[in-house]
Picture 1 (cartoon, rainbow, N blue to C red):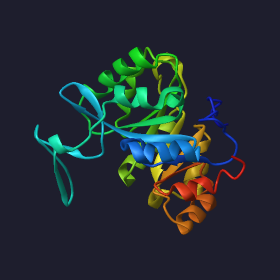
Picture 2 (cartoon, one colour):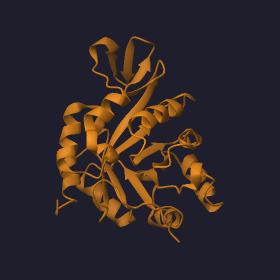
Picture 3 (tube, helix red, strand yellow):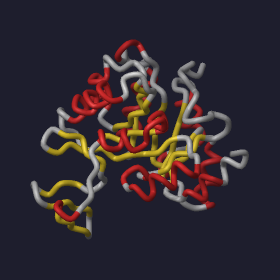
Length: 237
């Protein structure tokens, strides 16, 4: 039987869930995603000197940020903190999906501290491939865990975890969902996962062909950079 977790996401919940990929990393795409009325708006969160920052670029020492093929001086980049983002979205905080990047042990506790101070009573979705990080959110029962997997070994670990029964997450909360790369999913695997969790998200879904595949897989949520594609899934809004 599918877990009876809180299935309400964003402002709705009917139909497939729409998730704007990395849209909260930049003010322009954030506003566009808010206006498009997607269910969840993803923000990449990394740690720098004890402070959770919203950015996809990795740190290359204290002065440089990088992504394959791109190096950016930190001083020239506009990098909001998680606190800044929470203030920016205001009453839309419940539409955030925080994707924790990296495996530094201090990251999740730092994020939990910010949420405890600035959004203690808000339902916020948190995703990470490092599932042990959810222990840091023990005092935040409204945090919804999403276990992500981007490789075959991680998918197998996830299947094993779910087969054994959900671990004792903080406050006995259910796992809200799993997020699995599109190339790793089959309809059988989605069915198997949905026996244990409320939602199965997939990424990247950036073309009509990818969206058709997602429908065939019967996932419950798609992660896309294409806001027009996501908007097409919300015709009544």
